[in-house]
Image (cartoon, rainbow, N blue to C red):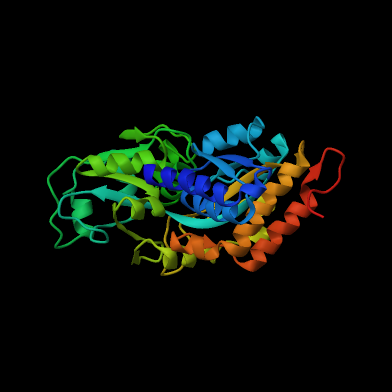
Length: 348
């Protein structure tokens, strides 16, 4: 995703020149998930232009983001894998969601365009388990009558780094395939039965672009930005749906944030005829006790801006903004849980 990197840094530099009087503004740092990087870059550009505050966000994968916030080397971490309440308590952390998006299987097969190939969860799992190794396998052909499938070996592309996108993808496969659940499971890093690894959503997208007859998985914004061919997925209602804002919204409505301790919520394989089956929220991690309250306030100001003014930007990249009632829950969570070393609240 070199184009996003150029846009992010270039726009921030240009915006910084426009707001030179605010050069003393506090800058904030974050690291983690590549899944939300496109929208964080877009929000950061707009926020910098408005306030002069710069966000330095390292798109290094959820595993790296979790480690960096645990080590206090950034002001916030980012992960597509939510941490359990016990995991949060162990490190004195809190988490909150920002947007909802979708993980999308993408392929590079001559003659196959976006939406032409159909897959279901079982077949997708068997491809990544190396049980299905040819594109014209009977199980794939049965789902795609009339589609010309090549007698070619399938190359699987997966993440090589600790990845929340991997967790979401593997969590879905664990729900639709007992074999996957028992043999591989779901985590940010797993032991892949087959395939080549790319770093970040960017790396997977790049490999799929270059390798004929390959299949990988990326966050949908990366598929769109790189012109990758996405597949239709059969959801739990038996409907074949395409990825995009509408199908992500359909899945998102089943999230029960008010009942989720520590905002621990996973929305793969949700019900609904229009639901995309591999949907996910993405999360921010911060320490409950802040060594530098002033910087923590700036981080929360940035996300408050994103919730209040960033919905259209999110939708332009096919992320689902959180509804107002969920934003109210998040802001109440900030007020109740985040404090300075002296016990004073960060949010008044």
